Image (cartoon, helix red, strand yellow):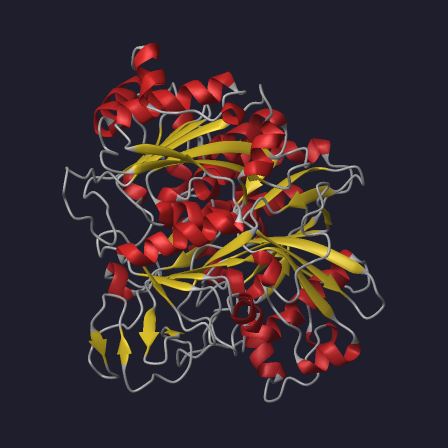
Length: 611
């Protein structure tokens, strides 16, 4: 990129950081390419946090919240054009287009590198380039992945400090010759001399680009969430899924939780749901009073990402590669998710929520609306004004260690042993409340075909199912058909396979009302799953899988829930399932050239069982 002598003379390099020659050279060359004003090596310390948050407050990016209500917490308001992941601008630049597959955006890596090198040239003019060493996974885990993100966004730095191991301890682990994943990020808003900065710099043109063979991520133009916190979706899922395929493990968009039954037995499960299906609420579920009195306990290992591999117990083991929550705020309340509310009580960054007159935060679903707020765009808001107070994708970034029921093994480098894998979706019809797959292959088929029904408002037609295999459609770093084949192949390496289930909290009656109360009562479904894993309870065999009956399903203390409602929530209708099989056609055709034959066969077997 630049003559070495020019690079070395442009920026100072502390000797401690010069030990890793490859890293030092890359940092200097990138700073020169981007024309960064200065370089700051991040150590992850409290002093650094204090310095950066103060800088963000001074620049108008952060507003410090009332320290009595939310100690050491801040509110950020993004540019309205930069509020979510940009799937249409997210690319998997594998060497061959077929390796990216039909569900990913692909472009030639050589072409993309040339295009983005032009974008990155001088893009950090007037800005500091922060060097952020990070580790996804516990530092001593066999799966731990070290990356280094170069970014011109202090917002990214402070969020990364919460979301993963970051700073001096990671550099020490990397040593002088360790492997790392290079991650380059810029908001794409250079500052001319004397130009006044804006509170949320970004660029209208955005690229989030992954090079799976060389294990690199380049991100340009966005400062928000998974577009900019490159350790999260980019490394921990898209790049990690490609690494996992090659190394015989799995990087999944899954929660990890533990359930302790009254006899003291501990069962760990993972679950994969598409968006808006209650994943975080389930991950942080707290037992209802009737369950807590009996001795049931729940613990959280992770709310979003799971890395799984055949462990020393013969089971799949799972770790959470993150150390924080980047959770969706709307709908989170003391009723729906008390653990999340406690986790975000302090040391939290809120993005695009509303500000109360007392210096606190509010969002739709939080509580009764106050008489006045400042909305996420900075405008006055009152109930009935016709606008959302908080953006629908507003977020909280909170340390996972603040969750009151965090599992004691959540940072164990060997992970936790998994007994069950749960799939699900938002289905107002067809899918019962819960059923169990016949075997591993059938379970993979259930995960591959899971999805959520769209609404008339979204599509003009009711009943269209958006398939989201294992909730990985936006996050798989290679061909989705090959990914499903990898799932099938994993069974050869696991001595004690987890049992697999499908759940649906969202089935409705003829009047459009939910048949199942949901939220904390979902523990009743988990109890049935746990008892099935422990071999303590029988199931009823149906053409779609094993289901509970009224007598084997716990409804004690569930006021007003009748056998008729249970039967409606568990209803299996052949005509609905024949329509479901037909509805899967587009999905199977899209992946026709890479779809494993075993899953084609599962579809035929399901059709035969309908006869």
